[in-house]
Length: 346
Image (cartoon, rainbow, N blue to C red; front, side, top):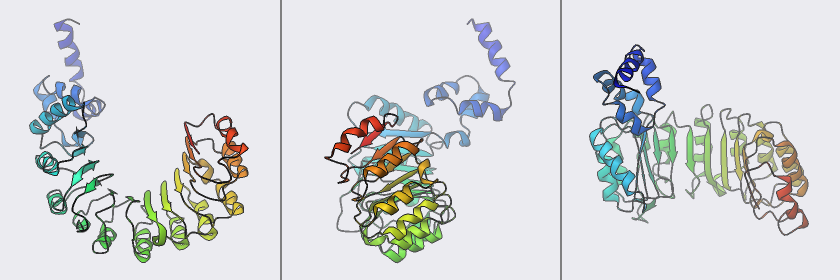
């Protein structure tokens, strides 16, 4: 394309309204977006529109082999710090470095520290960003145990998404979550020893908005909790790691989850084959995209046959350590039964 053709093309594009150009910019990768800043003054102004940057996640990784990308992203962070709204740090094992990098960003609405080291000052440090909508600490490590880290979640009135490792939520601050009226994604499956009454109250407080709940379970979840969850009409993703205390009364309530797409229920000897079959055959449940039934003792070949025949949307199935499946002749048939499923674990 000649220079005159490029100018003519630019003139045609510049006849588009700002809103449409911003919509086009949203489709560009970050590197192309930054190049667009240098085209003309109008494009520079539009590329720096805040609504555009709210969907861009800037990533810094301490993982070996990714230094080139990280250095480039640090340069972007320094030159566009006011525009960076979403920051993800991963594999950063020096909390001082994480704090330094995040400290350049005054307008964060999403902060993710994944596989990072965190110290006790973190609870105070994040108060710098009262408009946080997403806080993700998945698989990060807190080095000041047994001293609890106190995060005052009630200071983040716009919080929508919370994912924790095995710290950050205790009896002293758990009730803060009840005050986060927009909190619809709660992933706390590594937090143990939560109070049953708190969990019930948490579900009730989010019944109209809850979309994701990953929880450890154990003594903190009972059949009444599952009945309450069955009334959460927006719930799409439910995972309960320890289900030892749950019985058929709670299990059958899951059939009422109208929007459920992802279901994990692990570790149970109480669910009967009859009610497992009843629940897993229900019209709502057969729409699942992922299903994990690991260590559910009474999962039988009959139940797995139903799954293989009727679950047309299923892409992931786990029946790990289900004693009626593993080490049997039926186990040898599983691969042929689930040829259309991406992953089957058993």
